[in-house]
Image 1 (cartoon, rainbow, N blue to C red):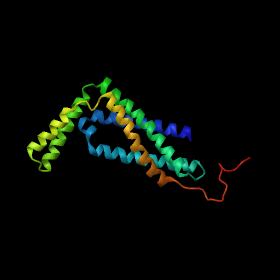
Image 2: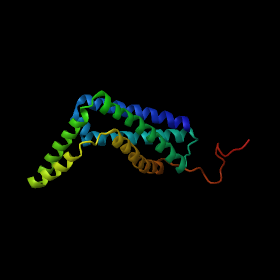
Image 3: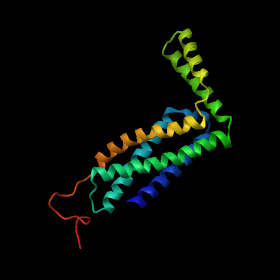
Image 4: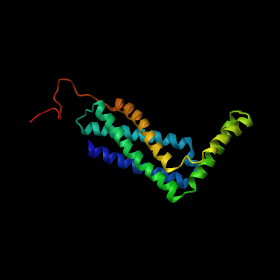
Length: 181
């Protein structure tokens, strides 16, 4: 299981890097789009389910919840760490001006959304001031903290997917891993 988990995590990590690179070249609006985030979430969830089911098939058609959870969780951790390292490099080496541009775009998008909800201008200005007060959301420390926090999200997703893909062996049959020589 270790090799499968490592390989799956590396594949998904590099896929995450590829998606980040594509959205970077498309533009800032693609990077902050909720649609992009939703599409990536659905894609990765489908890939975790696919890889889990594939592992279950390789494992004789059975996969207990504990193994399913560990498989998905550790693939997600590896993937998140790889993608996170790339984001740190992107924001601090490749294009150090990008975090400021992203922050400005998020503020503009938030202001437009608040206006569409009919918020009074003074409330909008207050919220924008709060957002501008902490422009350092992209520091290396905050990015590392974000990676660590995402492990909690990964655990929740792994638990749900683990419940979906698990298949316990029959209680009184010998499965390949229970047969002793």
